[in-house]
Length: 164
Image (cartoon, rainbow, N blue to C red; front, top):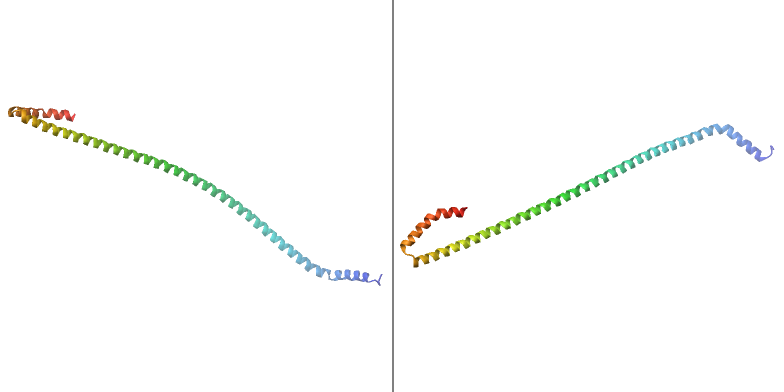
């Protein structure tokens, strides 16, 4: 057994770790512990970043829903304003149409009155001319004077009857 290489290999291996093991083991453990601590810190940082990202996602979702609600409210308000404007425009157009129609009726009435007055004036002119001709031919001066006096006397009664 002392002449075999495997035996001496095993003994040298064990002696190496007995003598140098604690000196080698401490730095290896320190390196591994430092790496474990660094990984733990990175995992904590990743968890913190994940929580922040989830919070930001919740905030963004809430803001998006709020913006959507505001947009819907704005659209509803705009629709109501458009309806009110349409109703107001329709009412104003109808009012303007009624005013123009009334103005046209007033113009037509004024034109009718003017035409009637013109016809009356023409009839009066024709009547006066006819009366003058008839009186000039068939009425003597005394009868004509008495007719004029009677017409002048009846003038206030005729004017008050016409005014009423």
